[in-house]
Image 1 (cartoon, rainbow, N blue to C red):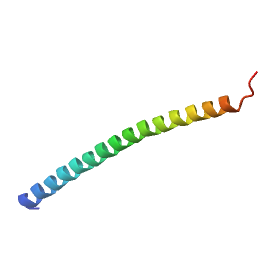
Image 2 (image 1 turned 180 degrees about the vertical axis):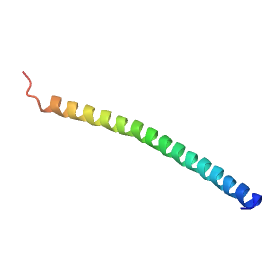
Image 3 (image 1 turned 180 degrees about the horizontal axis):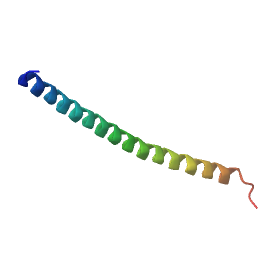
Image 4 (image 1 turned 120 degrees about the vertical axis):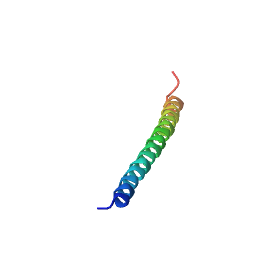
Amino acid sequence: MKLSRLIFIIACVVIGVWLLGLIFRLAAWLINGLLYVAAIIFIVWLITVFLEQRKNQPKA
């Protein structure tokens, strides 16, 4: 194996690992953002359910 081929393979591996790290970082950022959105939607849903239950209760 020539030295230039070895250097090329090592460079490809390093670039591949770097790109994989970027992809995983982007995925983690996306999941983190979606968790906040899901939490906000869940809180809004809980509030609407609570208000509907209060509205449907007979007044004593």
